[in-house]
Length: 364
Image (tube, rainbow, N blue to C red):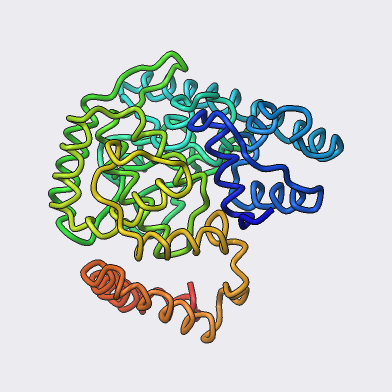
């Protein structure tokens, strides 16, 4: 093939999602093995298998590769069924306490996919109203946690692993911004009122809420650790379910919250990877910024776990210097948010000095 493997991979994702009706390549067995590896690194194996299932027999990978992926895909489908059941169960549990909770991101996104069971599930994110202390006390009273899981009230969520070995994150704030955070929270909490009870048995937020919240979330992970194509695919799916009025509303809020540069870069990635049309975009794409996000995603995979430059020594001075360098390297991409993030980092670092002294640890 003359095209690079990442281009072929993107064509497969488009084919799986029904964006394109033809896959114009015939990879060799070696190339298929590399494509399978990319699907694993990007946590899109279920969607990837859907593409293979649609291919003509003469274009499909060797049978042994297909069979192996089919087993993985069945496990993904089973996990999604379980995650939907658990999301509905927690909805009922909180409802019994007189609290309406809302499922964010993962399962709320999955239900919008052409094949809702094909999205690779992670944890379950649930928003519960009331603020950190009230939410923590509620979780203790319900027996969902046995003690304080997070010593710092700045945390956006309280996490625990339940009896079915599923990671649950209970959010008392949907997300945060270093720029005009108060206004962001007001917009998100207003939009949460438009959440609806979906057939899967849990409350799902509005498209407007999801587009604002997940753009902030997506950009945060791009800058701090990296994301895979699964996260970008989620945003693509959200945009395909949005109306013109939704996109105009969201773009106005994105400008207000200082996320225009990040948004333009993300739009470019969605166009290159999934073929997002210009009329479905929130703003004009920015190739320079988008190319950086795209390359980081190809190299690093999901949460940057495959990035060869990512240091393994998580508690060392060398790793700390590496992290600071990476953080500041985003200055040309987005000066405002880079400076604000660095200021916040040092504020948090200084505030934790007593805790470090108490534990006699330099790195917490």
